[in-house]
Length: 399
Image 1 (cartoon, one colour):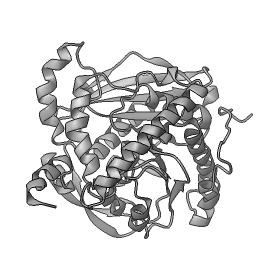
Image 2 (image 1 turned 135 degrees about the horizontal axis):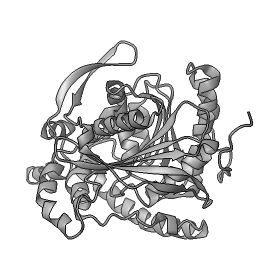
Image 3 (image 1 turned 90 degrees about the vertical axis):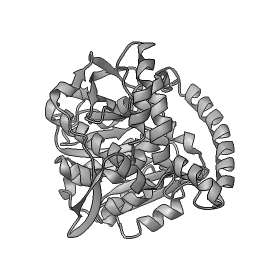
């Protein structure tokens, strides 16, 4: 890369080490799996009850427009001055599975916890019978009425420079642990997410151990950029092609969502808070482009059960790179669908297929007492057996 472009490259896609240093990360040696030790950055993201604001609860309305439980909203501020929104979706007793686990969701880039993420959370809860915790990205709350939110834009921009995916993952695990303690959840979690949320998943493991959370299984969709953006010459052409595919894919998805009568439930997907937008552009975006996601493969225990859904025309996923990064992880499976773009992640069929795998994994976990092999996981990873899965909402088994 020409020297004149290096400052621009470092601005758009800084190195992971640069991001960790900006966020005040201190390297610590931790054990991953059985006897393997690695260096991981840890950040000051601890908070106390006084830093948490409880919002007015609401009812969970699932994709069948059924009232299935209640959600509790939280606004949390960490010591670095960053605020994050979170929700706990608690199913009514008759809708809740007897499984001793819950679903943990991290949100996609530029999306708040409302709209699409609320739709996914309620749909997964309905189809699996599991409670759900959703943790939003940095600066995802409305601290003040508009236009007073504009007054904190400068501070937001300064704080955003310290954002990294590692710091986001640690903060997310800290928030999930707080919610677990507050509402009496099990320590067993299934992690999921789309795009940014998928990229946080492998970083969660060392931080989960720090907060006494136990990740049983990870099932995520459409991760991106396992290598630092624009490190390869062909990335510029890849970006142009990706934009073209996504323009078409977005139109197709819009038509599908209209056909599925889910458009109204997606209202609120586009964030209007200027602080959230600023933080995503200045902080989250460069972290996504940094190649940090690829580093996290080393942070995953060798026997971890993980499933990545990718799509043929989502060109920055680079599944060949992912397969190389996870070559020493026999229980990690990377599926590339024969069609689809990044936008396909929002399709109901993709969400339902994930619910099927979560249900199947839950059955396997109980049957094998968390002692399973790749052969045991193969039927889980093979789901769905057809392109358009059908699922009914969870029904508690008769006593």
